[in-house]
Amino acid sequence: MALRTSLILSILLSSVAWAKLPILATKQDVTNIRYLTRDGKYTYYQRRSGDLLLGTNYNVSEVLKSDMGTHYTIASVPQSQWIVINQIKHMHRSYDPRLVGNIFRNKKGQTSTTELGSGTNPEIHLNGSWVSFYEPYTRLIIFKSLDNPQIGFNIQTASKLNPYFFPTVVMSDEQTALYVDMNEKGESALIRFNRIDGKSKVLYKNEGVSRRLEVCHTNGKSYLGAFPYQQADAASEIWELDQDKGPTKPIYSSSMPDIGHMVCDHTEGKIYFSKAFKQGKAYRHDIYALDITSGESESISDFRYATQLINMDGLLLIPFQGKYYVPLEQKQAEVKDTLGPKGEAL
Image 1: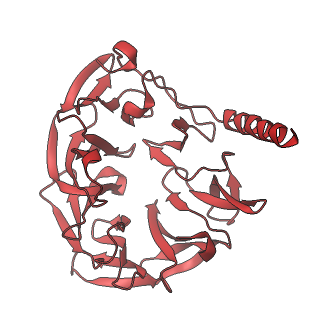
Image 2: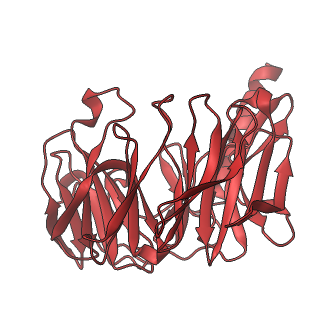
Image 3: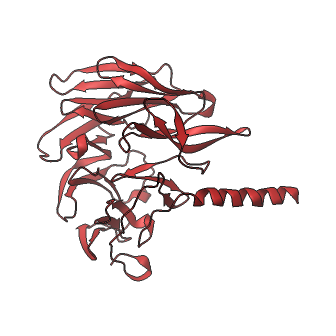
């Protein structure tokens, strides 16, 4: 009886904790939505038929047409006029982690698209003027200017060992890219690539194979995070990067097995990430805000199992159990989309 009462109390307390954060407000099933501008003006969503639609000012237009089973992901930033669409056909018919999609450029609020190539994991750079995506079979990181897709360059990565490895990439300027690669031993390294001379330089190399690296960039500064693959290999660190010397300024370190997934382009002076903490004998995770100057971190969620966060057009979101929560008292504009029967887009 005491155990049952304790379990019920735990569930009630968890529900109260989740209720502290507002839920992302949408006029249709949130699982259909692929991108939502913070001002509520444009909503991109997909139908079961495989089509990608744009809802704006109570009108619906078709952006891309495809077959049933097609899945879309969209990347953009608030400063950019462009969005980048990854169209993955027959996604659920393949178990290959290297499954690639067709990458398209689209101007926000319009329906015309330009195909940029094929790959996965598109990343937006330099306030939305460049995009990179990864071609896992050729192991190429492909960069293209969104203003003029004829301008671009490629980086040949070394990773052949792990089909689940995908490099994280940032551009610090139009001539310089920082990316994470993995050698034949499974060791990760941060590498700087100079577009002018085509030369690469290793800025940091992991000791052993127990930690993964991720890099992010904002306001002219780059940051490197190292997070363990397993709880037994607990040790997490975040540094500020010098483009010539690599990690020079430690910002954060912990003996806990943090997950990471850093977002550093939302709030100036803050890095948001999934941080571990101990609850009894078990590790739990929540989203924390790390102050870059002081190195102090503060929890912005109380889920205990929060492992992901998304910066969608300047709106920081925490996905959790099929819902998207809005931390930090951010204001969300009214969503102006058109709905059909049962909440499905017309």
